[in-house]
Amino acid sequence: MNDRADRSGRLPARLPPELAEALARIDERQRQMQDQFSDVLEQLKRGNERFVQIALSDQELRAGLAGLRQDFSRAMLTADGAKSEIGRVQAELATFKTQLRVIAFIFGPVVGVIIVLISELLKRAIWP
Image 1 (cartoon, rainbow, N blue to C red):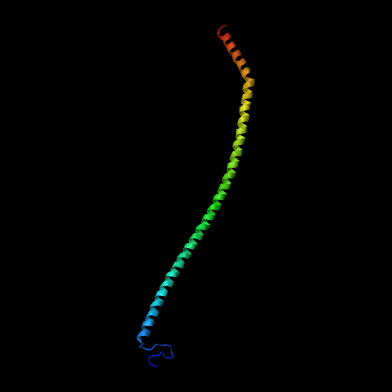
Image 2: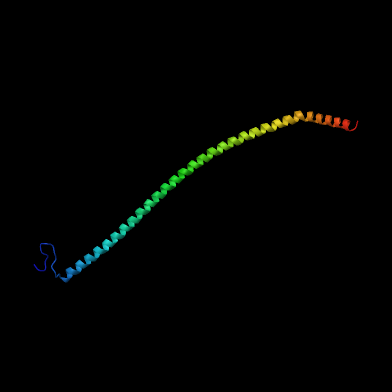
C-alpha cells in the first residue's frame, strides 16, 4: 500500500523511477501544450484585432467612397448648371452682337452724313 496511491488521490512520497520519468514527461508536455495554446491564443487575438482594423478601414473606405460619389454628383449638377449659364450668356452675347451690327448698318450712313455736314459747316465757319 506504500507504493500505491491512497484513497485521497495523493501519490506516495517515493515513486518508481519509470513512473516518475513518465510523470515528468507528462508535466513537460503539458507545459509545452500550454505554451502552444498561449501562442495560438495570442495569434488569434492579433488576427481578431487585424480583422477589426480591416473592417473599420473598409467602413471608412466605403464612407469615403459614398462621400466622393455625392461630391461627384454635386459637381456634375454644378457643371450642368454652369454649362446652361454659359449657353445663356453666349446667346445673349450673340444677340448683342447682332444688335450692334444692325445699329452700325442702319446708323452708319446717318453718322457719315452727319460727319460730312459738320465738316462742311466747319469749313464754311472757318473759311467764309
